[in-house]
Amino acid sequence: MDEHRFDEWLALWSNPARYWVPCNEDDIDPARQVSIIYDDYTRLVQRIERLRSGSVQAMDPRPRMRRLISNIEVEPGEDGQLTVGSNFIRSIHALRHDAAGFKIAEKKVLLINSDQEMPLLQFLI
Image 1 (cartoon, rainbow, N blue to C red):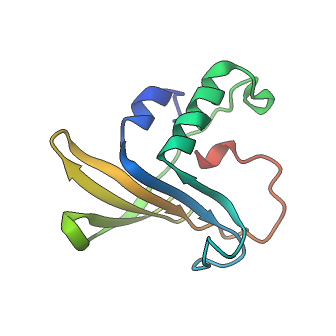
Image 2 (cartoon, rainbow, N blue to C red; image 1 turned 90 degrees about the vertical axis):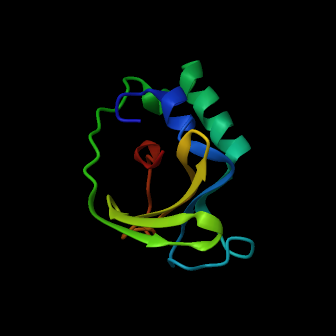
Image 3 (cartoon, rainbow, N blue to C red; image 1 turned 60 degrees about the vertical axis):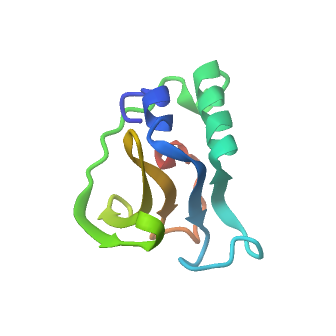
């Protein structure tokens, strides 16, 4: 995403998938409480189409970013998935293996300031 290679980023995801950024608490029930982002695979595709369209004013000029990911922790999960935690903000990924390798089945981003105003969220994708 840092280089705006949207199709390659989307290819990292499995279908079905979930991308979740809780609001206020890290372990809320997204069906009953507000989340900053709670997207399925279809919504991720729509986000990428919108970013590519040029209609997102906050993306002009395109933000310059470089993510630094550290402290990677891998744990075996259910059904052959892996749970991978890393420090970016704080991200937790569930990876699903298919014929092409591992794909992202779920991403949960835990923001330290999730209870404060966030005028721009482009860095989250």
